Image (tube, rainbow, N blue to C red; front, side, top):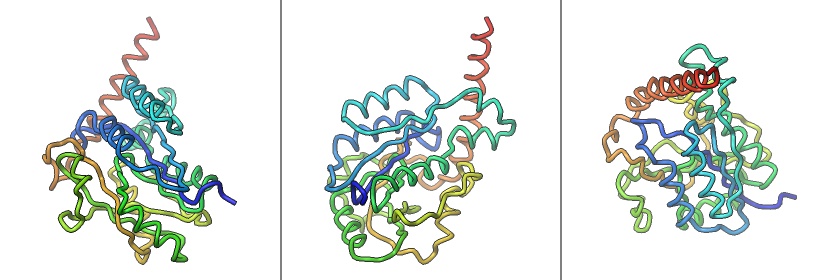
Length: 253
C-alpha cells in the first residue's frame, strides 16, 4: 500500500540563457510555492538538479526550506564534469535531465500510485488537477500525457487562465507505479530527450491540463525555441568550463 495516491516530483535546474531568462527558476519556484494548492492525498518532492551557481542553488534550497518542502539535491561535481571530453558529454552532465526524470519516477514509485515527473516550471491549477485526477481514478491506463499550455507574460495569468486562449505545447507525462518505462539517459538537452519518450507512446490518452510558467524572455523566443536552445548550449558549456578552470587554478595556488 502506497502512502499517497499521487506524487508530484519537479526537477529544478540551471537557467539556460537565452532559452530562459536569468532568475526564471527562482521566480517560478516562489510563485508555485505561494500559489499552487496543497492537493489532497498528494506528496510533492523537488529535485535540485546540478545547479552550477552556488548562490542560486542556496536560494532555491532556502525557498524550499521556508515552505517546508521535501527535496533532494543532485550536486554538480567538478571531478565528474572533467571526465567529459566532448561538448555533448559536457552538456549531458550539466543538465542530465532524463537521469533526473528517471530518478523522479523511481522516488515517486515509493510514494504513490500515480507519479507526475514534471519540469520545474510547470504549475498545476486547481481546475487542471480536478480534471486530471478524475480520469486517473476512472481509467485503467498505465501512462498518460498531460496537455501543457505556456504563458509568455505575467505568471498572474494563472489566476484567470482560459485554455481556449492558449496554444498547447510539448506535454508532460504521468505514470502509474507499475509502469517501468524509462527515459533514455543517453540523450542530452535539446536532443529530443523528452520527445523520444513521448513518441514511444503515440496512443497514450491526453488529460487536461498544466501550465508552463513564464520563461522571462519577454516573448523574444516564442517562435524560435529550438534556436534559442541551440544557442544556450555553447553558452552554458563555456560558462562551466570557465568556472571549472578558475576553481582548478584557485585550488592550485
